[in-house]
Length: 316
Image (tube, rainbow, N blue to C red; front, side, top):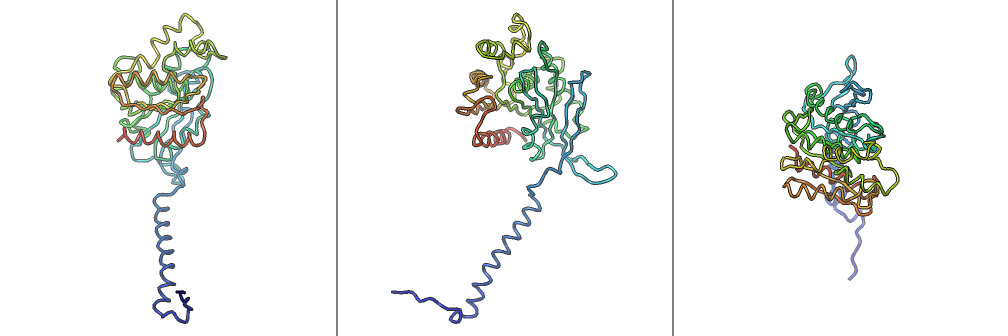
């Protein structure tokens, strides 16, 4: 049986109005919801923070940090007004084998925290050959500086996260773990701040084992940093994160590719096996085929999603 098509002349007045007004009402409703969403959940957020650069936390010219502060641009005469809220804060340490690199090169790893309303402290430290263990002392000093100056920058001392990649991964691990053990270092501030998590991007966890591995490759940055083969065992024992894991360690997320040629994947495996034995909350995100900061677009998307899911589980 064939259906009969209706012309406009055959449609009653009420039916015609329903046909016209229902789509129009739907469009108006969607536009209203969209305008409300964009008013309160705007995707534009880069105007919500300011930067104070190269603040000294020590006497050496390399002992400097940048602070990204949440707030509002309000115009003259003061222009920027700090947020009145206490904000969760990321402290970030860049990589480079302890002998090279610069804090400005890692801005891309900070933006997702800024987007979510965090403060960020981006740390520079003493670099160069034969400088061990200055980098460790510096980042611990920088964390102490943050604890002592938190009030001035509306930093929530109960919601601190440490992060870094490669040598910076080592530095965030060692500074976070030492601050979970009272008296472990002259710059200990574990009684003044709460380190809620460590986000470790393929960091060195056992310095001596990394040295053994790198002897068979080009560019032994462990030897370059320490400068004396006889001192490697001593430095490793005193400054390897693997030796500071206790039941009081902060939750740790590690991101590591299993094809990393600069920091071997077994450094991450060793860390998380030890964390598991200690009963500490931890997660190892393994990226199949991932190299040293060499991940696919899909893997980077997974990394960021995993980071903020992990932090959501452990933070206030």
